[in-house]
Image (cartoon, rainbow, N blue to C red):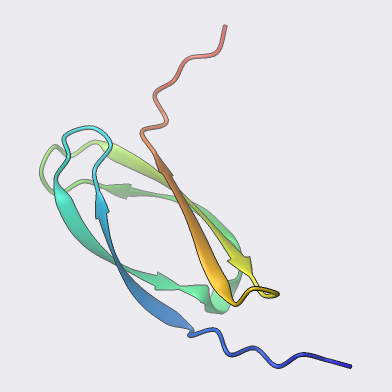
Length: 73
């Protein structure tokens, strides 16, 4: 039995920059599935790493935001 997706294709989300704390609005587009990309903060101009996962079973978009500046040795 297939389960129909009721997940909205686009969703507006307010986030904070992990570098400077500036608040900004993003429009998440779930039509392309899982995504891993970077946005530039309009305030401090540093990259924000966004990892979006589409959870079809729970009908939710999971978004992980980080500064991507941790160093691994």
